[in-house]
Length: 85
Image 1 (cartoon, rainbow, N blue to C red):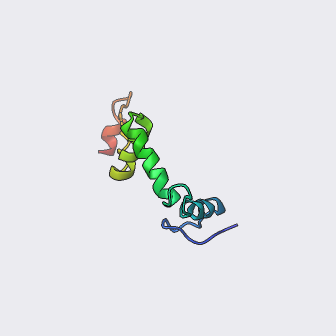
Image 2 (cartoon, rainbow, N blue to C red; image 1 turned 90 degrees about the vertical axis):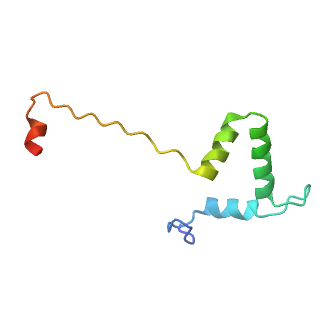
Image 3 (tube, rainbow, N blue to C red; image 1 turned 180 degrees about the vertical axis):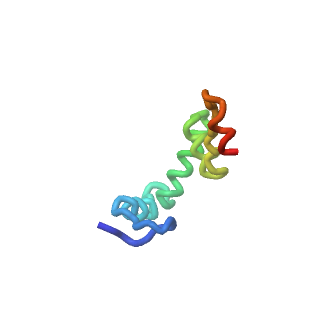
């Protein structure tokens, strides 16, 4: 079951649509949108030293660090790589 397209160009799932609706509702206890309350709770956790919360905030603000890629070119015969060059 396909929904409307999201930012990535992929169809939005019903779960994503439901989350967006719920997060945009106003929290009756605080009068703030639930998304804002969730952000506040995450920041409070980070300020309290929660490393997962700190990492999530950093990744959201700065982007996730690039994954290191290691490439080891090794040819036991000694001539395979040289033939390509």
